[in-house]
Length: 393
Image (cartoon, rainbow, N blue to C red; front, side):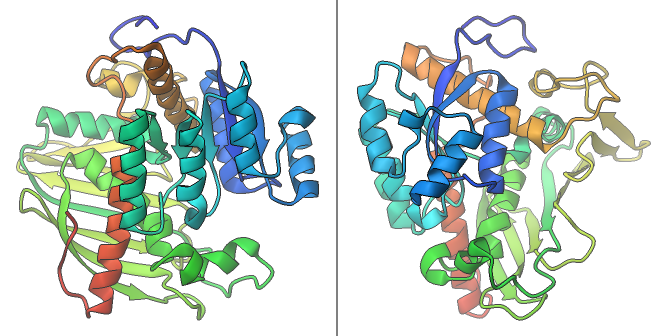
């Protein structure tokens, strides 16, 4: 791999071979993975265990144009068969519900295959520790799919804050608001059935589903870890078994206060992941529903609107993610493409025994996945105790 310039990713030497577990039959998360891999132009999707039901697996494999002999119904069979092939998969995307992640990941790690895992990474901190030990033993790449920091303007915010554009951070707020849970759950929805079952999803619903994205974003952008939190869970939509809304106070490691609000019952909000970060010298604001712009508000100066594209103040780490000139809109699918680009760079470097230049990629890994799981448990502990402060470290 060779860099083409300070603003470019390394060129790919070849397409890496990708497999997917879960995500078939039109499942949204599988489509995101498939789209991101294709947009990156660094992966060839060659195998999948897309469903445990033979007919659904066969139909999904045909839809995704997989060879019949590489369309599996059992991920264990898939791992064994692919590891034995000279042209076997080099990484697997795990797109199944979170209670299955640990076992699937361990099977593929034992087969020497790099891991791309949806969040939440596991059900419990103990499961996270087991995967961390397995990764240390194998040395494999273990990527967590947080796509939102792969919007160029989210990366721009991170770079500006790291450079000191805001000065010391004094407060930070993040929210993720949707509206699909305002009405009653569809009783025939297989996805909602497990999302409301603590035995399968864990101790929180909306908090695990979108709250983990919110935590990852605010820590990624500010460069600060949340040291403590206190949380209240609520049902603000139609009655349901688990929370659809959570309000949290945050305390960052530098002592700054913060707030995190997640809801799936706010009518008129579709995928509104927003952050506002304020420091001694100014503030930054970004909204995922309008991802092309970043608002920069330096103290006692006019507001600046930074538009995604090349040049005009866009930092190299953000510029290399911009695929089109300004005025040609990019979207979450492009962010997924950027995520899969960085995963490919990490996997290719590991397999070639190369060390990547510092700062080239900012791939969310196993530690980020474990942090998301501990966040869920800390929030649930706080709520159960009546809103007490809980350490997140």
